[in-house]
Image 1 (tube, helix red, strand yellow):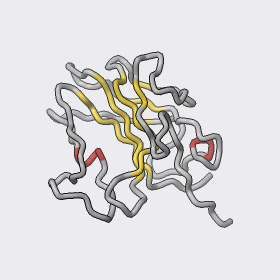
Image 2 (cartoon, rainbow, N blue to C red):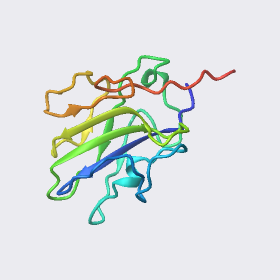
Image 3 (tube, rainbow, N blue to C red):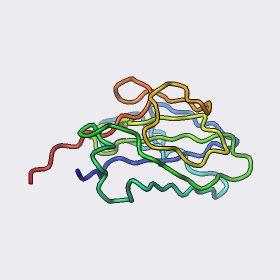
Length: 157
């Protein structure tokens, strides 16, 4: 297993709002080199909303099994989250890589239009642009739909 500490999986709740995404950081400054501005820092939960996201495949700060990386099977991990508040229209999932030295994050997984009744994703989802549930998968860093696991450097033993 490789130590993965730089990938943030963020569930952004979309209830009655839309969030414009542009080349500005949370403070409105123009894009510059340096650490990326992550979605979790730009799109704050409204009305005190909070989703608890978990996975049987990993815990925060622990090793991510190779099967979920490009060094292994490169399959999407299973995820679960608490139900959003009344009025939730859909969920958005962003798996961003904060371990890069550039303003824009590296996206490993973008999924949107996840139905409000959905509170879990199974592992090894297809990389189709549209899933059977109607959820849509955006383009990852390789400009392909679906999950693309991180590729951590090999650890010297």
